Length: 431
Ligand code: PMP
Image (cartoon, rainbow, N blue to C red; front, side):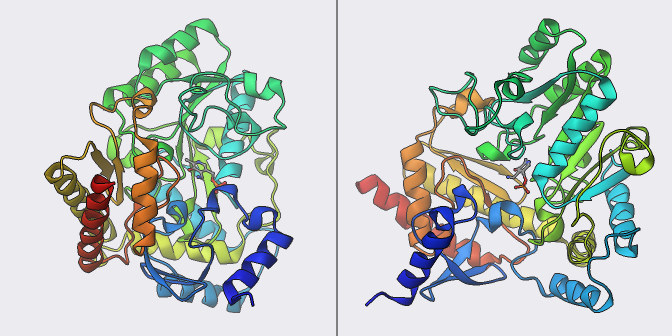
């Protein structure tokens, strides 16, 4: 007799390829979840977990946040998708976005970060009339063709022409150049090799798709100067860093203003919403403003996503909530605690992160670029995360994946997590 869980999984694998709707969701066990509230998930078998995966970072305030849910419900009482003209909700999202994100004067909303970076890249090619996009080894910007190479490549594939997927035309792959993060010379070399041909440089200002590769301020400043001098656009892909590290994203913290910015994930606390914005003169190239870069999308600006985004932005900027101070304090507690445990136990590890994000790499020495991350002991990393998840603390076992503290986590959650981490790491030492 199959259990209820087995039955559900059989159905999932029958009707959905691999049983999941995104390849990276398949982690073995737990296999599926029934409820999500605050910092907790409950799986099909009724087991409770403290969640640090946070839907790849889309959950900022905590799961199923009452404030966001109520705002969404209220908006549903007024209108659903209209698809003509504009709603007050869309105007408010664009106004708030311009107020919060330093580089944004005008913005559009999309349903995913992938569409947001796709629009930014296309706009940059239209504006400059140039062919090439420059990205960095390890950075992920979604799954459209222009950015689908050299993401978290293995040691053998890093720095080779490493496509994210089959089915991408060679022309698309070869129109994107790849440099080393935090290494301005590697960028200058490509500008020298492709004079007047690079439309834009796109980067995660903090590459969280490989954990937390912290940027050198001088590198970011150098990119700003170089792109301006070369007539290329600078695109900050703040799909993870946006709203999470500060209301205005990492650009607010580093004081560097890109030409275009993409954002998403945390913007709607789990509701599907993303967007991109920048200077008004650039954004006016969209066909909605009479320009020649197509702007389309049936669900863009839908009321559910807009209401969720407005409420999320309002909560993270409310001084009485103190969202960033709370999550940064708990993030620091986690980093300090993991550092103390790994040092006390003599485990080769480097604990790092920023604000609400923490990661324990299983390696030592300086981490400056992607090349350094190739020293990470992927097996130890996966074992630690797997065993933490088994112990009831969801940490994604795929290598180099970061963890997130949300506004709903408490000091007690951190205490219990560190206690479990000590036990798990002790067990790994004994193996
Ligand atoms: N950019 C970055 C930096 C991301 O991390 C992601 C998603 N992991 C994307 C873009 C794509 O966003 P989405 O999954 O919403 O398409």
